Image 1 (cartoon, one colour):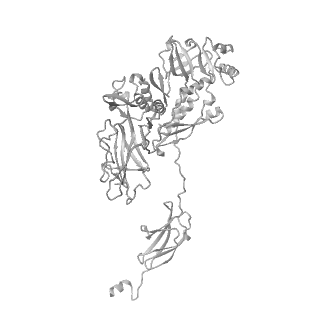
Image 2 (cartoon, one colour):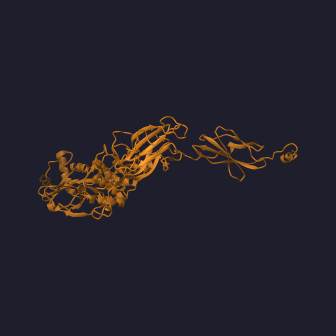
Image 3 (tube, rainbow, N blue to C red):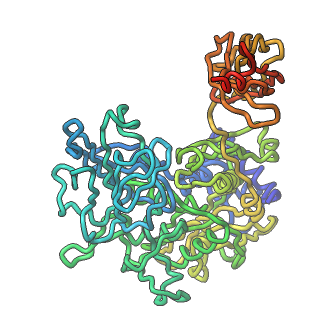
Length: 623
């Protein structure tokens, strides 16, 4: 590609600058160009320098981020859209009901805080995986009562969102079976939801005096249609049917989620199928084989989709772009049908020569410097960081940095990606695609009508190297001339992107030196003894210590706790020891909850207690 019309590009580029000062003049025709000696015969190729490259960005405009809010924030918003959870992801959901109730007669009035939360619409979802409150795992018994420290103060019931649900959410807390005003008619059919009840009781160790703890439910999101499991689809085998959601299954494959979003999510209302989310296209309006190809590639590469989008303000087309972005893809409009393009190595199907071109063909001479990037900081949703969007490790290409003369960095977000390595792969693809040449337009003879966006062709013109082109758009003229919009396609980028290793960011926080030295020998010593006791005297010579741990043992035995004292202590008495025995005393300092090394003082021999008139046994015998 380095020799691609090199001489012609230099000539046309110079002419363009002479005409406009910034790029190729819009009115510069092929006849004008050939008069300057481009050397391409018979109205073949028209090289542009800038304007067409701007068009490349328009063809592949990145999706905007999720606009419906943060999936990890527990909130109540009456204007919020319905959440739509995909893959395995964590969400705090949307509060739709919040009421107080009386549940425990010995407590204050309205001692229950009841919350109904929708986690995902368009159910049923794949299932519930786990639950945390303030980042602490909480499990529940069969009755919905929490197990462990939240027992009798936290209760929960859940539903997957069947259509219709057989019953409303219900969990008994004390004497209260339901939230105030909550009836058997409140079924929330089609909604994956929870009923979460919190008890306020000041006599309990935990009684939510600081408010509702931050919840997070880890769930398997909505189920999807897979044509590969549909025996009515060519090559498929199984019971899946595109118009019967009860046959669909849970998946993390981005292209199956994209196909399902194109089909849309529906419910039956008064005997009619009504769309509630997605594009709502019929199957013959979708180029299904393109999505099947993407699904197979995503499975092979381990690409997954995960996260929550919303019915508003997110647009349906932007949601489709976000889903496909997670699988290194983008949507295509081909006539009146919806297709998709996946980044993967492709074989050129045919070769375009000068004899195939009708009229003027156009192709940018190079990607403009302003559109090139050589470094990306990918932002993705990290399970290790409480499922928040975080920046991953920097992805850069040193050869491009050297060629560009400096580092050209962008921070790009992949909101439905939950894996650092996958985000790094997508970042490398974005770097490589920013450096492709194009787009260009190629009007071709009717024999090229059967080629479509997503196909690759080779451009072979006089005085040029062969250039591999990826078709992006197709327009058919009234005289059966087909005009393709295309850009260059570099084979080597795929191996480079797939080999990209990603790294998550480090956990935020201050790193402490947790090493705590044992007390020095001069700090503590035996100052006295006798009468079954040992007296230690000394002082703490460690400014970080918040307490002193004392222990003792008979020589060679196990250590026995003798108390924890404040760091101001200067004397410690250990009493109740056996006369005539030999003891050792241990002293340790504790700082930030961490105990340090032990100073062993001793051995200390305790004398036998002597009484007037003989030994203690003699006295007892006389008595």
